[in-house]
Length: 235
Image (cartoon, rainbow, N blue to C red):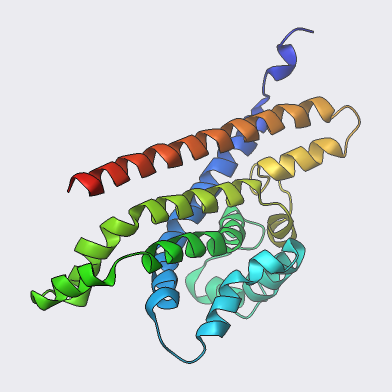
């Protein structure tokens, strides 16, 4: 048989590309919200902070199927939010790749927030206060002082969110099902292979692909963090 079993079929390539696309969209869409929420949790002093922190980390505690069902209730065609989006904006999330991106983003969001929050908490407040005494606005201080210092944490959070999105299965399959070419991500495709006779070879192929993608993502994270850290030290 040789190495012929490593050859990926067209359907497998579709699942891989869809996973990469969904994970990338989930990561970048989550990023501004992640930075905002992380900053609130790290620096904010307001009633309900513990509640917000609990809600943010809830997807890590709940079974993924429960999270997927809640997304279906909220963002399905007849859901509280989904009905509004569908009727007035023409946006349908359930059983679409956009819904898969939403589910993946929700599951990876806590990891992103935690990483960025820890970076913000480690920033020396005296540096920000010094910029403030020179007349800089809070937004300018954040953009020019805080943001560069927390970039390694942001990069780490993005990679963690991406990796979680690549491996997400329970919430995604519950919310958007397992539709080839539309919502069948890498994890769903592996699961499908395990459910059919003789599918072990296909499952192994996609498993190896998943390992390679995850390893490359980790290497990229380390490299980017190194470049950012080196730039910050030089400046």
